[in-house]
Length: 135
Image (tube, rainbow, N blue to C red; front, side):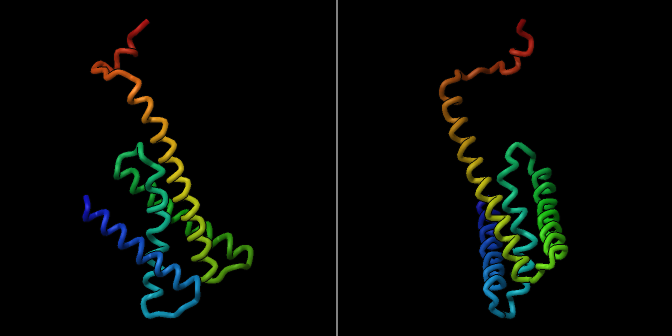
């Protein structure tokens, strides 16, 4: 598990570097590849924490769909409004991903606060499904 976390951190840093290079307008031989990496991974990584109750394969499918939805929606809206440029498109995706990630952080903190008192106050029961049969 730590190897996966390190790999995801490296992907995130590399993608954010590409987004920053493109947003600022600096040219680099790797800027295009890093920006593509950002556009393919950032929406999925931002949506992942919002889906804690789903199984890992389902979370992966939903997160990857989020990548497709965010990128195509930004492109379609910017093209139809006549505002398209690569810098603006990457910046829009970056802002959306930051908003989704901040919502995920707030959601995680709220659920942690709500779950902590409930766990300590409720006695541990081994027969968790007996309440279904009570009259």
